[in-house]
Image (cartoon, rainbow, N blue to C red; front, side, top):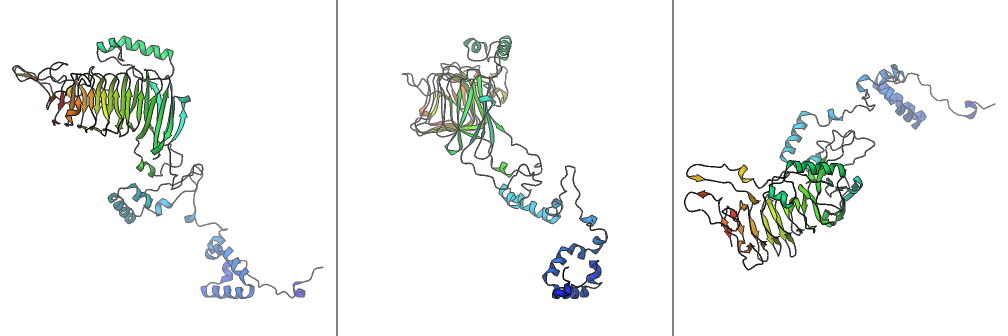
Length: 488
């Protein structure tokens, strides 16, 4: 038989009411006195007990309703089972704060200012499956991943932008003229021939011929190797969008503010020596060698810009060379070397040759007029922007161009711009030529000379005054049309 509490000398604890509210009394003073008395008699256990039952002490009505929270404090689940969020209603959407922050961010449009204020929030309603923190890792080299069994490769640049480099078939369009089709310089001379060629390819080759590889290079550049391609294979460089994760529709992507969506290519090597086109007109800049050693024609090379240290070497014709911005070639052993004819040269800004960099065209410039390709312009670009005039006194014929340069050409000492033969369709410049004495036709022969120059488009009159004809024919054929003149 166990001993009683009195036999052990243990004092009986003070009795408390079953209702905590009645234990405290109706007045705050009595509640405090009762708490102090209980602490004196029982010590800290009395304090801890009161803390555990604080919700009932502070809200006696809740205890009387069975311990439920008031309806105004209840969080209701959403359709997907998560609790509703109320931060949106309390943090930013107070009118004075919204206007003050908006005014500041409109005056300081940098994405960093908005990121530091977290307005709009970078991450909200974050999914548990895809954790995204405010700081992302710093990339030191580009990342690559093979796709489609080697027919494509996905690249992630240092700024986080994504690209797909892939092989596909070239477009089989009608030839610019009959002579081009007869000479076999790509294209076909009739719609029937074009349809026949396309049908044969669709039946015989279900996928493009060749593979493409990509490797990281210093400075965030990428090197590309194309294996097994033919003259009917084209290499395209296109941007890829960012993957959208579930639950992040209202989270703001601050990383997009620092991405220029232009891939820096340090090398392109076509090991077979044959390719139909290389296209990165608005998505790729070239800062290293591009080499296609075979003698078959290339329909189009299109780049955003050509930077110092870059070079282009081909063994055959290039139908169209499109550069969206500028060509800036610098350094010995660098430059552009076209094996045979360059039929159309489009440059959105200017051409600069310095420190021993050269621009060589093996034969002619503008021998065969080219149609517009992609978002670039064709040999008929001037006729789209000028009006033909014809009457009994004067007749103006808008010429085709072999080159449209929307800036000027600057050729420093030690560099040359040279053609192995002559200019056919006019070389049209909206700027001028600085270093004109280093621009040559029939380069390397005894007949080497500087090409004739016009400062406006030539027109034919019924009398005298027409510019003299050249080897390519009447003006402006064979001429450089430099609207701002030339400087030796």
